Image 1 (cartoon, rainbow, N blue to C red):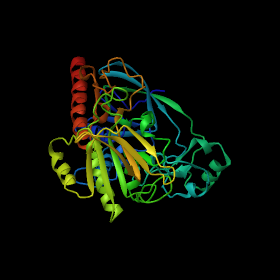
Image 2 (image 1 turned 45 degrees about the vertical axis):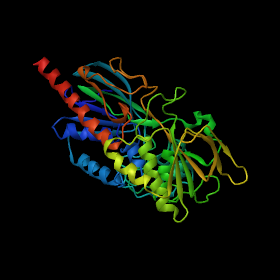
Image 3 (image 1 turned 135 degrees about the vertical axis):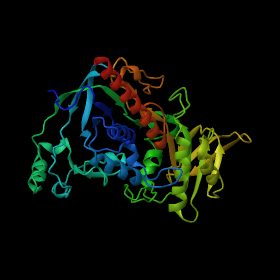
Image 4 (image 1 turned 90 degrees about the vertical axis):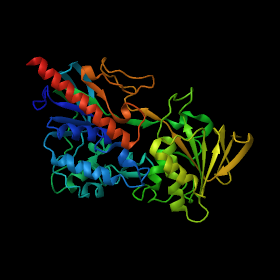
Amino acid sequence: MSDPIATSQTILVVGGGISGVSAALEAAECGKEVVLVERGPTLGGRTSRLYRYFPKMCHPTCGLEINLRRLKANPNVRVMTMAEVVGVTGRRGDFRVALKLHPRYVNERCTACGECAAAVSSEIPDPHNYGMRKVKAAYLPHPMAYPQRYVVDPSIAGTDEGRRAQAACRYGAIDLGMKEETVELAVGAIVWATGWRPYDAAKIQPYGYGRFPNVITSVEFERLADPSGPTGGRLLRPSDGREAKNVAFIQCAGSRDENHLRHCSRICCMASLKQTQYVRESGGDGARSTIYYIDIRAIDRFEDFYQMVQRDETVRFVKSKVARIAQDRASGNLVLHGVDTEGYHRYASEHDLVVLAVGMQPESLGVELPADVVVDSSGFIEGSPDHGLVGAGAASSPLDVNRSVQSATGAVLHAMSAVRRSAAAEA
């Protein structure tokens, strides 16, 4: 069915992470009508899963809370969650976008009271925590979720548990009759802010991810460190729940490698430097980190942060690309094998926990984009501003949060220019 609200002057922003939210706000505060679509149940993207930002080590709740407040207050932005772009036709100033709306089974009456969750016993892997813990099949995505509304997992929608959740809601917010539907929007320009996903660490066979429980990824480690995460902020080993005090960080896990990702993912070095501070803060006496690296790429102003970590006596740097990881069966510890290129001596170093600094891939990989959308050799969206199709944030290049926001601002300027040129051509 068609959507009567969007017009040829509307800007569609695809993706509700920090880039998408920033782009939507910039356009809306310039007076443009914006539709912001997110395929998940809440805005915030991967930024909402961070424990802290570098280099100031502040919490993402700060920036997200401000942006969400601006979003709620701006009538020019229409937010659609659980909405997925499935088709785009047309041209600049006259795009037709097909959206598939997935059922949430919870309507706008939800007060986030939690009675539906209390009424069910089925659990699902927690998406917010990368499946590292279970949540009820009726759940609030995370404490800062926007919209602040529960989700009923499809696995219980047609079951007795779903009906119990419905009966427990005093506000009539559980709607088990919701169906998948498709709507069509008419928009003038599209900003692709679809973000990134971590490279599949299981493909890096010598490192044993998926085989050795104490090998985890950098994004999973971020959730471990967060007090609202699966371990309450304690750095506990998945194998036995023992506190990890001797942590190895392996850089370029899948990046700068012809067998995996050819590109440098740009944020990984800074992410690991940041995460060594989590180890120092939570591990107490005896906690230590070792960074195995090819090069440390701390860009411009981040050099000061790098030098601070270098001065930290709990952090050691080994210039080496780790060749393989073995597991000590008795202790569950990991033994890293390789050659230290500063001195060229072999090592076999034992650690409690290994964190793989996995590379960034565009989330749009495998998605059928419009023919006019230009992508680079890694699949990142370069866009086609002249045609009203623009890439933003980590969808366009491996970027940290700060640069993603800057990219979003530039992208939406291109989008506004595109709709203005279309209007001038029609006049």
